[in-house]
Each structure stands twice: as structure tokens, then as C-alpha cells.
Image 1 (cartoon, rainbow, N blue to C red):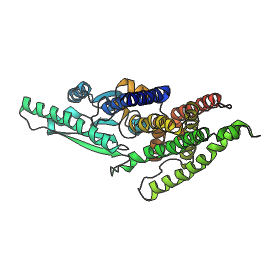
Image 2: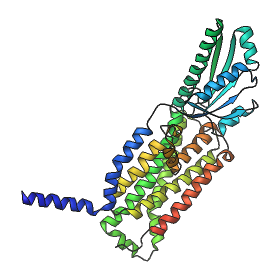
Image 3: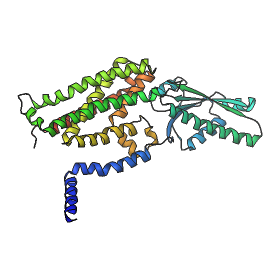
Image 4: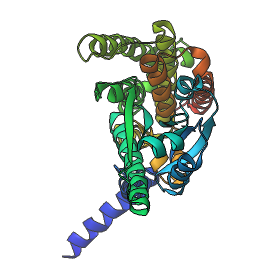
Length: 368
């Protein structure tokens, strides 16, 4: 029994000796429960919407007040001209626009009927359906209360119009996210594991001792994954267009440029992971925590970031895939120009530059 206890103690010492792996093992359950508890939700709250109300009468204002009082919506813009309806969606700032007809109250009182148009961004079909259902329910509640007060059978008919994805195809939402995840996995995870494998086998010392400069050796490890990612990019785009029916509504040139920038970001992330890990297992664990889970949960790929707590929204801002997915959706599906997404492109470029500098600076050319 004493020998058994001795061996158990030895195993504990062996585990505790690797501090970084211990941190991963202890932090992973905490991060998972937080992400799964707060990020995974089909409920929509504080969704940003805009309102176009040319009538500005008592009935339209009462409906707007009910919408503002709801926990589901946050009115961020009041449009003054119908020409702004398409532009507000291309800016990516709102997911729904509520449009009142002219002389809304007058028409309702004289004819007993009035119309409200609900314009929804259907690049995310589930989110668009949820938002229009919430808005329809609020309008229906106002209609019911108005009928109870006047005993007149008023009818306020919401007309729903789905923009960019009228067929409500799920592929419109998932293709940008899957593209980001594929590029991240191939570039970041596989690059980090490839470099760490050389360390683990002891061959990295031989490579670093060769006449070639260490920076060229590191880049040589990354170049094959860059070209493989380019092939996968072409494959995914072809399948998306010709099999899934997702069009490239915007510029194909700028779409490819953005993808190449994202590939550079992912390669730099893989290089960074290789500088902080010494084993393939540790590299895979870090990659799983840093790449897989955040990309799926916090990038907006599966769940809108607006529904998450403020802290998780802040964290999502440092995830490159979030900005990449926004750009791909806007260019590929909405058909906007590069000028509409220049801020997101700048964010990706800054991330790429910072990650490359930090990774190369931390990379050890002499192994211990």
C-alpha cells in the first residue's frame, strides 16, 4: 500500500510540474461552463433596430414606446428618409427596421386598418425570424389593447420583408463562419503543432543549427499551410456558390484579399502558440481553447454576440474570426464595397501585424 501511495504521489508531482498544462486543465472547465452558460442561447435581447416613422402621430409613437420598453430591442437609429433603409443594413449596425406608413393614425382611425413594414437582415435566418416575431407580438399586443378601449376591430398588419436571404437559407449564415473556422484550424492549429513536433522530437535544434536563418526556417514551416489554406478557400467558395447556392454579391477580389489577411492572422496565431508550448498535447489544448471554442461561441458564427453579457462581448472583440465573419457576410452576401467594411479590415491588419511581431520576437532560436 505504501508503494502504491508513493507512485500516486509521483504522478501528482509529474502533473503539477507542468504549470501551463495544469492551468489549461483547471481553467478549461471554468471557461466552458461560462461560454456554454452565457453564449449558447436562442433568446434575443437588446437587438439593435432602427425606426422610420414619417407620420409621427400618436399611434405610431405609442407603438414605438412599447418597442423601446421591451427588453428585446434597443432603438439605435431614427431614419428621416426612405433612402436610408438599405444603407442602414449595409452598415451592419441594425438587424431590423420598423417602417410606419404615412398618416398612420389617420388611416387606422378612418379605415380600421394600417400597415407596418418589418425589414429584417436575413443573413442570419434564425435571428431575423426571432426579431420579426418579437416585433409582431408587440404590435399585436397594442392592437388588442386598442380594440379593448374602443370596441372597434382595428387591424394593424405587419408586413415582413427579408433582405439578402429571402429564402431563409441557413447556408447564408454558416458559410462565412465555417470558412473562418477552416482557415483558423489549418493555419493556426496545424502550424503550431507542426513546429512543436520538431521541438518534441529534438529535430528543431538541428534545423536551427543549419546555415539557413531561423526566420526562414519558421516561415518555411508556415508556407505549405498557407497554400493549403488557399486551396481550401477556393474549394469552399466554389462549393458555396455552385452547391449551396450562396452568391458572391460583392467584389470577389476584395473577398479573396480579406481571406488572405485572415490567413496571415491565423498563421501568426499558430506561431504564437508554438512559442508558449513545448509538446503537441499542450499545443492542441491551447488551440482548442484559443481557436475552436471562441470561434464557435464568441465570433457570431452560431450565436449573436449582442445577446451575450458585456464581458463576453468585450472578449469577442479580440477574436479575429468575429471581424472576418462580419466582412465576409457584408461583401459576399450583402454585396457592399470595401469602403463599408474598412474598419473591420484595419482591425484584422493590425491584429496580423501585432501577432507576427510578438510571435517572432518570442520565438526561441536556442532551445533549452
